[in-house]
Length: 273
Image (cartoon, rainbow, N blue to C red):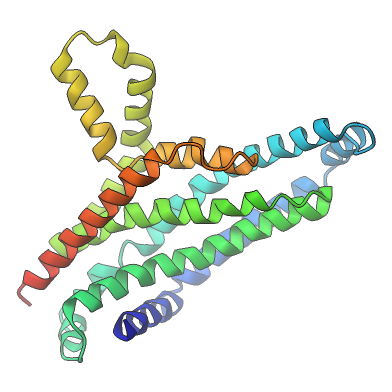
C-alpha cells in the first residue's frame, strides 16, 4: 500500500512538472470566471426578484435547480473531456525506455507500480474536479443564498466516470505504449458509443425485428461503460436532490473498471522490458 501511495505522489508531481495540473486549473478558473460574469448579470437579478423567497419557496427552488442543471450538463462533460486529454500520457511516458528501467529497479512490484500510476491519474483529475465543481457551487450558493449540498455529489460521479474510462486508457497504454489509441477509444465511448446505445435501447430497439441484433445491442449496452447514463440521468437526479435512483449503470461500469484494470495489470506483469 505504501508503494502505491508513493507512486500516486510521483504521478501528482509529474502532472505538476508537465503543467497538466496547471492546464486543468487554468481552464477551470476560466470556467468559474465565466460563471461569475453570468451570475452577476442583470438576468440573474431578475430571476431573484421574480422568484423571491417570500411566499414562492417552491418556485424559487425549482428555478435554482433548473439553473444548476443548465450549468452541470456542459460542465460535467467538459470535466471528462479535459481529464481524458490531460491523463492519457501518464502510462506511455512511464513505459518509455529509461523511465521504466529506472522504476523496475526500485523495490516496488509491477502491480504496485501500475496501480499507483492509475490511482495517481485519478487523484490528479479528482483534485481538479473538486476545484471546478466547488468553485461553481460556491458561486451559485452565495449568489442565491441557496446551499444545495447534493450538488457536490457530482464530484463523485464525474470522478467515477473518468476512473472507468481511464482504466481503458491504461489498458491501451500498456498494450501499445502510446496515448493515442486509449484517448481515441475513451472519446469514442464517451461522445458516440454510449449515448448511441442508450438512444437505440430506449427509442428504437422495439422496432427491430431481428432478435439476434437486439441481443447484440442489449449486450453491448451492458458491456460498454454507461457513461451517458452516469453523466446524464444520474448527475441530473443528484443535482436536483433526488439522489441515485438507478444503480445499474454504476454496478455494470464498476465491473468493467475492475475487469479492464485487472487485464492491464496482467499484461503489464507479463510484459518484457
